[in-house]
Length: 101
Image (tube, rainbow, N blue to C red; front, side, top):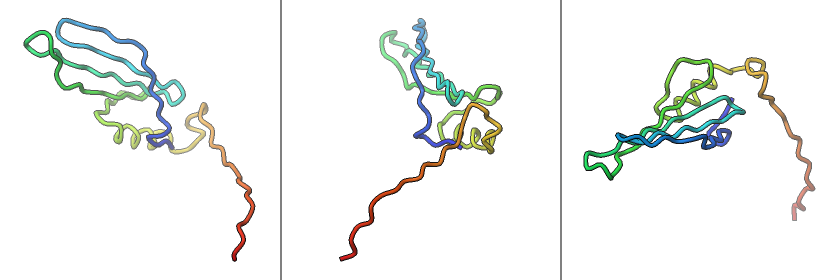
């Protein structure tokens, strides 16, 4: 299972076109990618509101927000053995007790 804190998308590359701009991002650990499309406005110089689409490797669905991506990812990889590259690690913390005075 992953949370927002587990997703680390890194910039891969971008392409500037006459009608907009496309940037691609990738998280190789979780096998997630994202693509941001920013349209160019009719004046030819300004840009409109960007839209980001998220993808999970080997899944045909497209996700328009990060929360639906996380929900689908956690359903897809419900058990750790479903994703052999991910490992669940439990950490035991030992600390000195505080005095109760």
